[in-house]
Image (cartoon, rainbow, N blue to C red; front, side):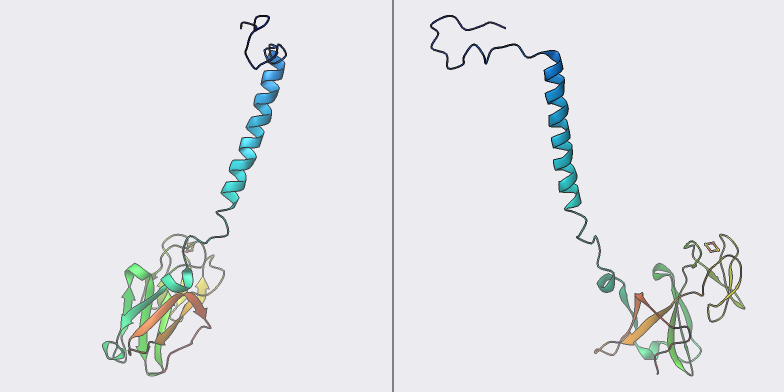
Length: 165
Ligand code: FES
């Protein structure tokens, strides 16, 4: 690095041209790296309060009109992982997501069975065997103003809850 000549019109003083030691340079680099990391971390934290999805809105889905479910109907809606049924007491919806680790249970003659770790559930979803800690979730089912039935996969209701027909 050159130093300014005596009488130079350059605005920098001799002090500004003083060579920075390697130790000072590394110290400044480390300090600015820390500052940059803190700024990026703060920007990242700013994203946390906003939810990526709105479960109450996106998890409600229509299943059809009540007349589509005559008494005795048992319908599995595979893409929603829900079983909807109608008996004399009304309409009900049971989640097919195992309460152990979330595998999808299969309908059997006596209830439900989980293929992952062997949990078994009765026809109401109550645990009858295996590691599942609680019954399958019963989901809120309601009738929309247009008359169609809707299931809220984000809202559990007590076992046995039905929408009166
Ligand atoms: S996920 Fe169903 S028994 Fe483990």
